[in-house]
Length: 326
Image 1 (spheres, rainbow, N blue to C red):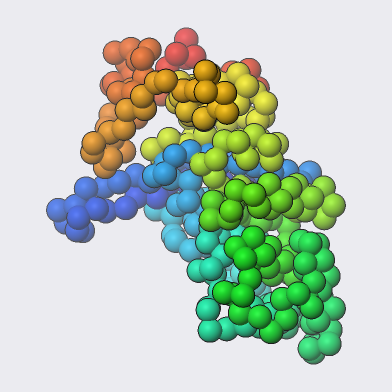
Image 2 (spheres, rainbow, N blue to C red; image 1 turned 180 degrees about the vertical axis):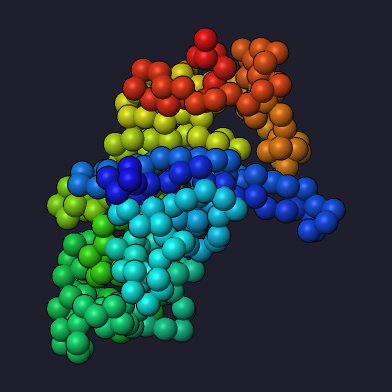
């Protein structure tokens, strides 16, 4: 089975939401038959990037088991996640695949001490038998993210900065020695001055500890800096996917080009002058026939409005565009 050769293997994953009621509502295809994989024995940072509403967070939540897919399959180390036995394999999956959420202040109860989360994780997952052992495990994880148990012990979330709290979130995830971190917009709620320290931390975790990272973001600057490969999502589809240098420096899909051109430059004489045209009816755009980007594409042909393009492999990356289909 091909899925056994990958750390994570996602095949034809689809999620459909009903907007406005079960019987009279409109179907919104948040993720549309998407597939990708992460290598088993070669840690990498794989980024899923796109604007708000592109489906990237829905994709991450399905992988974490927080929402059920409408169809499709997800495999972790060759085992189908939806078939995992909860008491045995499901707990193993929860240990080895850890989430990092967007807002660290929402991940911690303001009335609970931060270190209590770390002690519970160490003991409940069997990485420590008592408090003394847990302290050693916790301090080791905190050291990996540039903190120590002494710094955060007996402190509440409001007593830590956003950057410190996000590092604690990552340290909590590291306690279980994971193979994969699923990081959903992990720096968007952190001060700009601290973002690169968190991003560098993910790179260090890959290089020093062999942890792969599924990095979800709308920030192309950090995506380019951190990623080995990148997938660009638009209205539920991955429209371009490949090595980050190829996709970011020589984009082929018009949406990828638009995203990159929209990144502000520090030189005022070179700033983006164009206008990004957003659909007034988001649900309609998700369900429209043909290429979902056709209304915003300057090079759209008649076929773009009638038929959804298939993915084709061009110049070391997958791209979903009629222009490259002969």
